[in-house]
Image 1 (cartoon, one colour):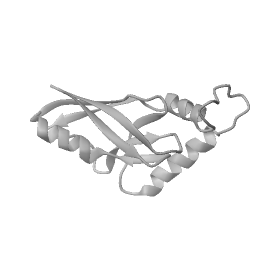
Image 2: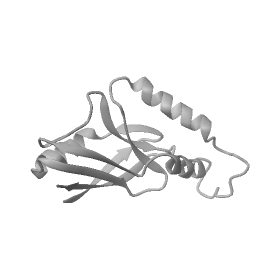
Image 3: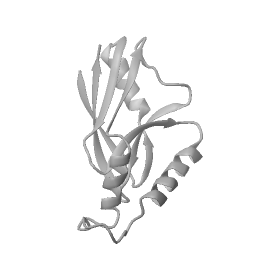
Length: 135
């Protein structure tokens, strides 16, 4: 089964959407299998991260912004704004897809794990995530 989720984001940062994926899994009737997610963009990424303390998410964002700064004089892809090339680099360093086992009709995430879209652009975006559920 393949589904497409639209995730609206307000700008850079981590945006949890575990609840949307859980709803798809529960509605699918899949008891045992694998949930694979794929983001259809080159300036955002996916990750599984701590969902309890938001400071972990902010620290990740600050660290990656320091690692990949805007306005680096070596960038040649600059037509779409100062944040575009850094967003592509950040997406290349992170993940465009993730997989989570499904067990007993539920995502087999750990207690403090959540699924996040990591937006690397500064402006609001509507992102598409393809979800495949299979046995």
